[in-house]
Amino acid sequence: MATRRARSMLSRRQTQSRALLFAIGVITPAGILVVNAAAFVMHNLAQFRLAIAACALISSLVLNGLTASWLLRLARRKGLPLYLAHPDWAVILATVLVLATSAGAAIFTFIGMRDPGRLPDGLAVLTAFLALFVPLALTYASRLLTGQPDASPFDPPTN
Image 1 (cartoon, rainbow, N blue to C red):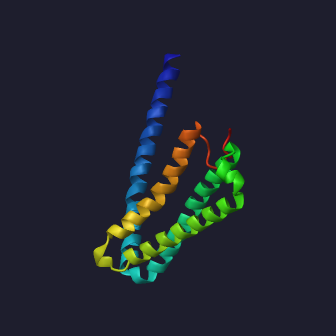
Image 2 (cartoon, one colour):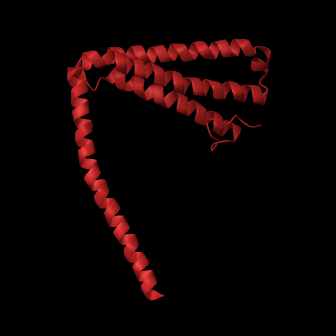
């Protein structure tokens, strides 16, 4: 029995050692690829600027759209009087807000990427931070207020 346990521990140590060696072996080449890709983008920033802004637009549309959808479903399920009185207007307002904030994220990202010598640009960093933080914070805060902090973003809110 003792030898089986010793073999199990040795096997676990060997597995952990191999995993560590594998991670060390993979991290360096992956890091080299990332650094070279970043250098390529920096060298060709003028050509990548529009693509980066388009990615910011798509990302913001997705995050803000999911947040707006969550909040609209929550308002419907909780029976908020203002929402129940004007559900179409709530959807229109949410759509306009999502489109406006997403367009703003794309525009400010595009402006922030105008000069490779000024990177990291404060405007681009602030825009990226807000585009990520605001939808996640709104979703999390609404879940805390409704007592559902562990709910999946794809599940409808419960009463």
